[in-house]
Figure: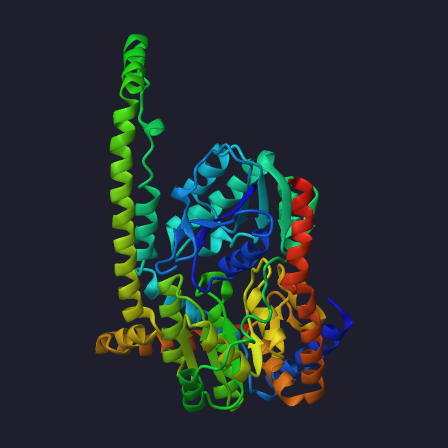
Length: 356
Length: 165
């Protein structure tokens, strides 16, 4: 019996890449035994095993699927030492330079991630990337025959959940007017500060009553602390720092959101954008990295160097132009179909069978 | 960029230009906001994430993979090198036994620390409230400093405007 195991650097309860691996695991189990292993599973994650428990060699036929999203010496050593064929699923790696002033060890890991990818090439029998942008990045490293296939995105996962009453109550009490939403980690390249500046311009300079909800794990605590301090010093009203929330709370926020806004300058795919579109929430983003293709014609794409003035005006346009709003909602919902995991996961299984 | 986005973008850019002309967005506003944020960041750089619990745990886990292969047997002296390698081979069973015990202990310790961190993070980071409280209780001196820095940013912006005229 074939064993097909997935290897990740880190794993979390609501982390996007772990969720992708979970979705893929249920499909892989049709072909053989399949588990997820991670070097750093977050506390409380019960369905992911420690990588140390995965033997480096085995007598049975085994395939390792590696989800590349960062660097880690232990994972790299494991992949180099194991004798099994490796399938690479590339989610891209965050720009190391942006972390330089915040977290030295993370900066080092991210740089190592690119170097590891380069040296892994000889072992890789199938290369999959979840966007054209990621495929270009791999191609620059010398990878060939890259399959672009966004895997394991369960569009309906959040739609199936009932709204969370406590979150509904909180939003009704604290969110005034249209709710602008951002979902993502508090890391430097997400440029949360631009969103706070946008909310400042909307409320203070233009007198518009909107609320800004920031959702996501506090990955770099000083980024989050600086954002809180910025909002306090500027006196920005209606800024909701919701932190990491449960899936039913996230579904509640998407249902209440009027627009999804991201000022991120680097994304390998950006699942929150896909989720927002699936909930009929128009998206405003910068035209950069994979965002250009993930958002495409289904959202408002601002120039890569767009500042808070352009963001504020894009919000105004979406709020005041019902025709534009309806158009973006329709296009967004159509666009999410291409990310349907049941179709893409099956395509991946077909590719996998050729390798086996 | 597709033509639909291009049309919307032209409208948005036009509106920004009109707002600038009407004075809703004063000259140099974005630069001033950026300077303001950079000033805040400078104050926060001392909060190095190098030493936060998660980073320390990552470093701890990276260093708790025990493997006999990483025990040095090399020596510049060929005879000593031979002896070291011979001892390594002869005691491989005992070495592996000890390493396995240490590994098991380390895994349990890591799990216990993970659980502790989870409890601490739930208390501290649940909704950012704890951080808000920390920030709101910062000293009065710090608040005065913030106000002074804000004022300085405004003066700098005014100076820039005068210089550009």
